[in-house]
Length: 192
Image (cartoon, rainbow, N blue to C red; front, side):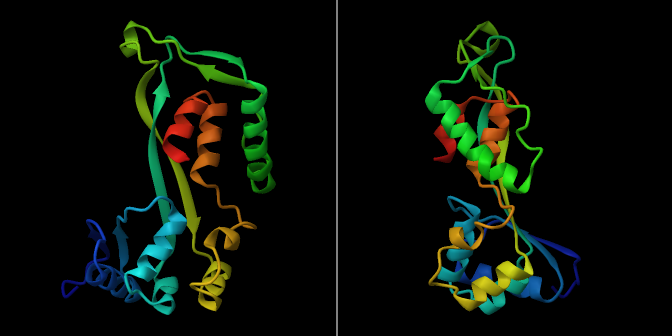
């Protein structure tokens, strides 16, 4: 910090000391990027607090928390669009109901079809070729900061973000299924 960098990259936050250094750097006006291994972005806040970072220090230091998982892309040579089963359709429509509450245009192309993979020589008979990220982004808004500070350990963060435009991994995965980039099975494999 003595060299006054504009941006700081911390490889991985595993310890209380690393977390406190990253938070202190962010609080002094530096843009800090770090990684943290958790199951979801919501778990990231709890993990940092469990490492000993006080909520009154954590909330002003955070701007955005991003979570990602890699799913296999459906092979363009052997995958076909087929009718979704009633169960698949119900699941997709349930996710779309939440997604479109905040993003009305997202998923509007859904017509009851999903990809099925068969396997071919192009994908080594796996049905998949390459990978794509499914993401969840949690913007730490003033409203969310206030909720965390009011009850940092008592309220489930899932409840705190329910009425925001936060889209969990599963929702982004469903959008990737609708756009024909991957299969529902693949989204289930990595995000549930």
